[in-house]
Length: 479
Image (tube, rainbow, N blue to C red; front, side):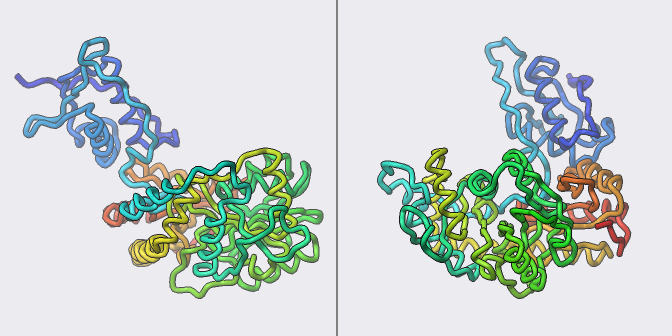
């Protein structure tokens, strides 16, 4: 007997930021878990369900694939797809699994800001964790970071960023010393929070790139600071937009987030000169600093003006945010203030994450991974650049980092493009949400680190199709 497909209790919200594939999987999972769908019920084919819901077949296929992996459904050759969970309350009933985030169900994730975690050599990863576990337990937190970690970071900065810094300092800080030193941090956002609390006072004015890194903006606001958005152009932060009396300027000169532009050498010199004249402390977020393509390196702000620049880096993009560690290279007064703040508040960066990085560096695995990372991302960048160029679609930010930007003319065009991508099982980011003030830049930020190279190749035709409907070659956004 042929089992008839039940009416599916599915409602998709196209206005929701949650991808349609995620919504569909959640709806079907919930229905199977609470008995609205019963064990043995036959589901429509992915093609039929896509037509029923008026979505791409990529959406239904991605949802079915995830549910099959979880064991909620099974496929029978020649007869279709069936629910396998038992009704609630029966002996065979299974617990409903925890909700999954959208990256676990989405067909292809092209949002920027994610690392190529799949490219980390698993043998090297296990070796590093075993080596970290061989270290005797620390009797107390290391407020500045484990010495071996600071030394590994100093070597990394010298080899990969051309920045010469010291990993040594006396326990009291640098009040009477000179030169910059490395401190371990819990990552970029954690470092920004420490600087805000240790160096600045509530009500102080800070200038942040617009559009820019909103997590940093919210961290500064949470510290009671007055945040002023400073627009960016093709050369970087517009210095004339920074008001008198500003205490701190936050920027990402290596690969501006999210526009992807590199700050020009002339703008860098002008920025540090102004900082010295007007008393600004400049925070240099070295976002994607290890990644550049076909262009010469530009001097780090910290190398140009170590007396007024705090340099921030992290393992989040070159390895994984799961390590929970980063670094700060700062002038003596800032180092001293941050260490005193840690003495009062207590938290210190993850010792485990620091030890893992030490082992990766000691075995040469960190350097090998960075070389592999650059080669792989260069290949992916080439795929995107060639495709966009061939289709006559304007883009920017491709000479560094792990994402590029396709400008669009209006916020409506951006929203439509994001929705169309989601309907095809592709998640991309928009520029509007990266503004603190009134949005002036619109478009898509397309990352190519989190997906695989075959996935990227597979979705490029869909990307070109939806972008061709949304953008005009040579169009110029405001800003």
